Length: 105
Image (cartoon, rainbow, N blue to C red; front, side, top):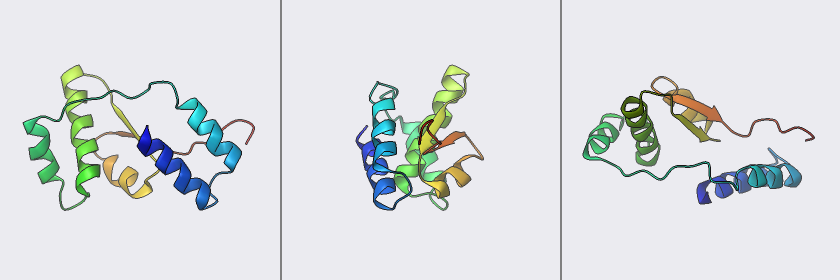
């Protein structure tokens, strides 16, 4: 959640969303919607494989999403305001680019 608050703050400071829009995003995301997961040895290997195209933190999200999708045989979505990450990550996992337009804003 701290990363969400940081991203929303950055978007608001750059004028990409209004203060009211930021408050709405934070209110929508105050419910637990994230799952805490452990990083496995295989994730570190995948993070290393992604090193040429992604910063380590981005690669970690991608590696974990890929593994969870395989483990659970379901789609796993990464959500972020980072367009660069979204464009490169979409090749291997589902990605939701924030902020999405909110009704009333």
